[in-house]
Image 1 (cartoon, each protein chain N blue to C red):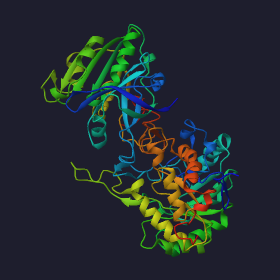
Image 2 (cartoon, each protein chain N blue to C red; image 1 turned 90 degrees about the vertical axis):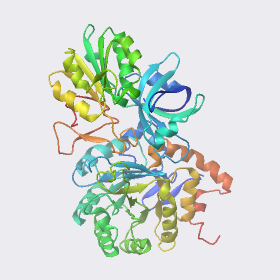
Image 3 (cartoon, each protein chain N blue to C red; image 1 turned 60 degrees about the horizontal axis):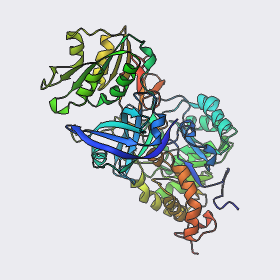
Length: 306
Length: 259
């Protein structure tokens, strides 16, 4: 028995650990450090219909136990991802790929989702309606329940694989959005994207990031993610892939307790590029220490009656 | 090849105002082949500060499995690093990036090495390697002021060395480009590392020469995955083609990227 096996719509995961979108490129760089096949899945960098260079520099700023980024969805565009990045991944690893789909209009999302879901190794898409770093699109689709609902319905019609929707924490009531997304036909949720933040330069008094604001990630946001997953997982029946500041195996268990069924590792890859393999190695021992036979026993334990 | 290793500090000292020299020991040294590459250091255990610090390698000794870095205390991360003592271990990822090309300068030719401030350290290993190939080296090193000057004697042992300070408190007063001009320094290849305005001035001044520049940029992953340190290329100034300073650089041929 594989104690770490988790089954989700479209995704048969040998362990619930995957690198988060935007923190792992398209896998090439990390493949030089370790065998990608050890991962549960890979969430690749957001893909838009056309190539994007992204925002001006500086694009990152370190903050207390975290960091701000405003990369701005830099990516080589749908055609190149289909022709180069996904085939490269298929050749070098057999883990399920979750394609992060981004855009600036409904048409963009529909175009990317329809096409990218035909790639043989793409087993699910992650609909990015929560990027805080682009002026139009992105987060605009993720903060209004009806807008999100309508978009999901359109994307569901064209996608050949299950659709997970990445939720933004920059909302008043995340449960409302989650419910609207579920009603729109989403197969799962991924949460949370980054929190909008800002850092000022002591000498110039101006924002450090050229884009002024950026998305806060890292351990600093973990309590926010835990709280939101705790709330949402009790109100929807679709599974959640949790993310937001996970740095160690203990954090993974806490996310599962909150209600996530699997997790993604983001900024921690930058602090330690070997973080995913080391968490995967540590998990069985931690399950022993906590007295669990199987990792799925942890899911929702914070609110489920035992 | 890239490796992560807990390296032991064998020497750590302040060598100028806010400037520290740290020597570390580990097998990772055996991978350090190109002068101009850098290491990515975790300055403390735990999650805060979260990110690593990219610092260029200033010298390598494979026999003793030791390498040296020189860094300026600039913020919280480097301040924490400066508190470490001999015998402490540091989490090192590296070697990262592409270094200066040695084979662009032939034997009996002259290489001019121009550095500004904390851009100077990687030029030391470069100079040692060029000298060992029989290449004549000339150094022009710029500092803010007298108290920031370091490694003058070490560079002098390798070749003619000019020091310039912005405030004139030591050496020539002015910029490195002024020194090159007033001294009429002739050379076959120019290698430079320092602030962008300095690199740009050198690029503009010697459009017909072989010039290699090393860039500094805010980095995050250090291995090319996060897209924090991208820059535009000469042939596509506004478009979607780009280079990553960490993994395509930090050394570029002059004109390759937009400064």
